[in-house]
View 1 (cartoon, rainbow, N blue to C red):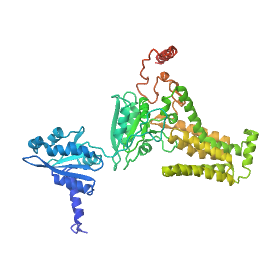
View 2 (view 1 turned 45 degrees about the vertical axis):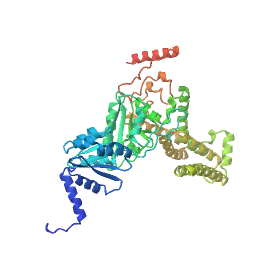
View 3 (view 1 turned 30 degrees about the vertical axis):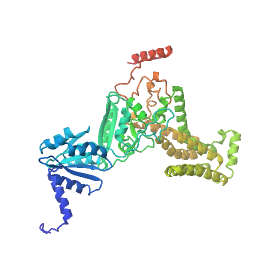
View 4 (view 1 turned 90 degrees about the horizontal axis):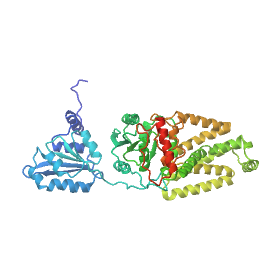
Length: 542
């Protein structure tokens, strides 16, 4: 068809195309006309009612048209009213001195009583700041605007963490506000070497993401690697830190977490002091910590507030609990199927008497009970709090008792599943507990096929897999594999604080030795001797 045969387009489409052509011709810069800027803002936001555009004039002799633009609900409206609108409308000095040439500088320097004031010249920066909760001031005759940080609105108050409870320690937890979360850590580490770098990730959401580390302690190569992986993310939205975790982890096809997450400021501070990097994501209370090692998921913040002997006992108990939740049903299946001779006679006779009327083999019985319990646990989590606990307790009691009375499962199987469930709840990290829940079924298949040989083979495969994992280049099983003697004191056990003189060698970079603490006269002489020996050993190593 000849080019001069063209269909006429609707007026609305022609206006939209003209606006796009004007925008592209202006190289994405703001217009100098205030009316054009207001029209473009309304068109771009679809005349949304929460986009507030307050137009006013300033100046006595030559009135200058201005517009204040912000998003309702995302700003501190009281601050805008008291320190912005009233100042611009009622300041006599401003109205007398203002001219079209100096209006921007007068507003920015003499009128606005805000800490963070900047300028924007492009529409991309304009809408990014506007949708972040900042207030924009447009002036007729100028192709740039003033950006005022007035972010506010309704926020959840700081409360106790819900996923990492402690008896002794801080009761403060992160919330969904990025600035608040960063300030909670800065209140603990009052040091200028605590550096924060920010970026925006997500082509649509433009989510604020910040990384935090202590300069001089964190490994510079790991810091650079974290930045590079974050910059390579190309996705339309980041709604939670779990998005970031899955996009920057070293290995995807593994059930074990290679990045630690927490909602406790003291945990973040402690890991920063060891040389790790924290990743904050706006809109979530969970902060990521990298690099992570396997033993880290069995440690609790409370371990460092209790005596070393108590903390060491609890850590050893948690590791044992993990293996109980992993292999307890598989062990029951292996014993009742292949290795009856390994159980005392009276006990195996009692188990055999219970299983006499059970129509299923032990493997099917274990799978049935484990799946049932997983369904009950998931239902208890998703139901409202008022009825969730009641349904889970009643469901477990009724189903367990009814299944035993009906002869579908044996009482011993119910006991094993209950112990396994309690053990999985006792694991301090949900991420590592969910890994055990998934691997438990593979261990049961191995036990039903090869007995104890299958369990041992599966454990060996799991250890080999764990040894092959990396978290930002750091071996996942460190300091056990590779074995680092100086780091063993804070793994499955925790030695006294005065003996923990070294930071993790594979995580910290330059400042490996912790700063020496001046010990007072009440310190026992024996402890001083130990410290002197440690210092002598350090010199010999150097």
